[in-house]
Image (tube, rainbow, N blue to C red; front, top):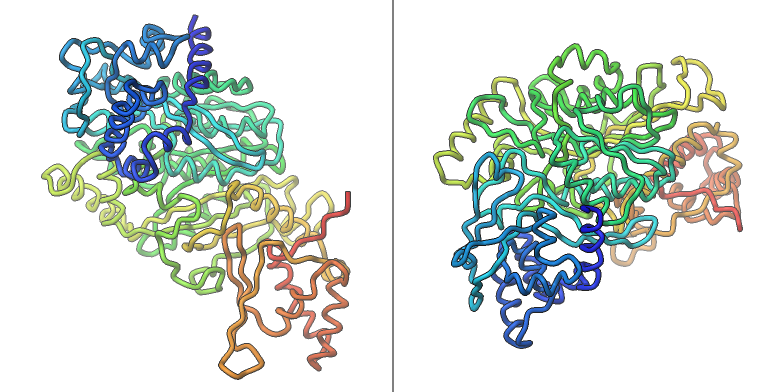
Length: 621
């Protein structure tokens, strides 16, 4: 019966044109922006004006009021908006509940995920919502929002159900809250490599959004979570959107997939560092239950045992800086040590959640993960080498080590980190409770010697075959393996379909150049990537530039300083001449030794290939 009801709901939502663009059309872009700040008054005023103008409520407006703004609607209006399902069907699916007569004006929107524990209901009296009265109304039990995206496979749209947010509840979220699509979710989905694979694992699926994205490039997806309620909502979302290749399993971390391997592992883990003391709330959607960054460490260490050869894991995470240890040194240790050592050092890890993190309010960290974010000014010019980037390296793999490309996007001091996540839990500043939690966070960081917290992206890969360090590369063990840890705090490039395809291209380019000696590289005919531009600065009246820079329009938006020789080489890479011929011509033109020039330029050509500035030409057809 439930499947039949979901089918009716799907049909009704499509008929009502319940979409992102339709909602913007109802209340405008300014109201959209206000909603992202958790303010609904502009949207309510727009809906009231539309109702007054038309003399009735549009079905899409009814759905928006109920499921986005979190306010009650007339039963008759909901029956009209959902003609196949009806208000009764919405109640049966757990989407809405009846409001007693006289309560409709003040809401009563409890969080279904927490109602059993708290009995909380929303206080929605102060909404600016005028002219709306009801004697037979329904309040929302869930959010049900339209969601649209563009990826390597094209444009798509879904409807996503999740627990009610603070806007509807009128109070802080419950600890078992299941989030919808937030900034961190958008960031991770935009990072996903879209290469077609047989199997994918979404570790800590939450509302199911990453598993749904993975279903577009994987034949089979397994989605896990420690929260039974999260799995229920994820299953609803998958069925509502007609996705049939996702399997759900209950359990912590890798326990539900013990002994299994996957081509692609995806995880938005509960990476928030939370004091483990009495009186500090622990939210399933963001807190892994371990001390410090141990949850992210457990996900990283366990990946090697669950990836197929050449399989890739992608996750978001944070990591601690300690007084006497750089965070990148700690990350390198996670990559080299087997998962068994993690289990020995973290005995609680087998019982810890791996549910996804963070919601979408603009004061939260997930906004800093959003594509094209410029919230953090770069410490050095984008792409420039500096002592802080000294951990960028390539090294030989061995049986225990994962290949890795880790990108730190932001660093926060303990004070800012604590403020961010206390606000995320719904505790207001300038209150005694906020000050108490603030003290607990700072006590924890001080006791463990934490000086900063880094945030970023982790891409891990299991080598196709292990190679003994120092042994020559072979077709079966090409290498050196990828081990790159870098800091890129600046804005990303323009990536309307996400950055996943760029990451895949960079991995392929790295593998090609790593398996290619200088003699073969010199015979390669390269082309400049279509998004690359060159910038030159001149002193007035001078013919020669004083500064030349190569800019990347997409990807990570890197910028590379150029000298005369490298600028000339890049400019000549049009696919007609091989690299060796270009170097020979430049040596003659610049009147320098060809071998010395080649020794200088070829390593930089490798970097430009790996970073996507230069490409191998695509064969015709």
